[in-house]
Image 1: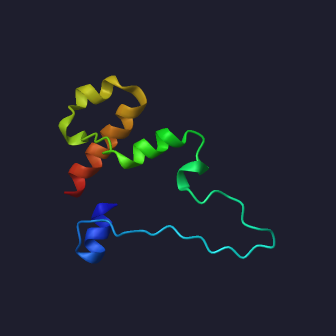
Image 2: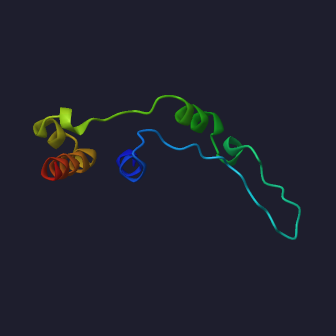
Length: 87
């Protein structure tokens, strides 16, 4: 996603996104205005989004190691192949 933004804007950072809801319903708006309250486990979601994300750098994992992990290894293996073919 960052590559798409970089190519489109020349910028390496994500743009600020301001959450705003325009409501024009018949009933009064009664949904939470706090984004975290919309999730079942709001603390988990909040901590996941606020803290650093988990990086899995497929380029640093050997093909043999990827083959040990059935489903995630398959995805990572093909991501590794597709990246090597593109660049």
